Each structure stands twice: as C-alpha cells, then as structure tokens.
Image (cartoon, rainbow, N blue to C red; front, side, top):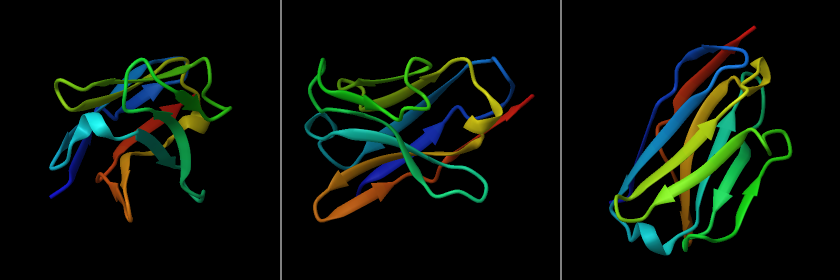
Length: 117
C-alpha cells in the first residue's frame, strides 16, 4: 500500500533553516507528481510546493515561500525533499508529503515545524 513518511521537522529560530524528507513506498514514485502541504494552527491546509515526476520538470511554489523553499526529489531513492531557508513564525505548521493517485490523494502522517521569533 502507499506509504509516505515525513521527517526533519523541528523547533527553529526565525531566520533558520530546515530540510524535510519524505520516504515514499508502495507505488511507482518516479511516475507521479509529488507535493508538500502544510497546515498551521487554526488555518486551512495549503499547498506549499509541487514537483513533476520527471526531473527537471515543472515546479511550483506558494507565493509565500517562493525564493525561500526548494522542493526536490530523488527518483532512484523514492525520496522527496523540502529545503526551507529564512524561516519565519508564519511557517509554523504541520508539513505533509502528498501524492495524488487517482481517484485518491494520499498523505503522510506529517512532521511539525515550529519557528519562534
């Protein structure tokens, strides 16, 4: 079955950096577009970044993270990454790795990122 396991979340000071990882299994990773979502306290879940199956391929970012976050993937290792720089308190959220394999969308369990001023 599809499994997505995130790691790398932590408590960090504003201006700091973190790298999130997502280990994928149970599906043909190299075939699918992968995404990072986040959900902050009291907020709706939002799309942070997405990367097409083939690298280099189409990459898109939420306006609030463009220029600070970088999404990448390693198709040989079935890994998805999110490099986050210049973090600020608004980035505090649970971060989720996700893949849409029609008709379903699959989610990991999430990893918590907390940024304090």
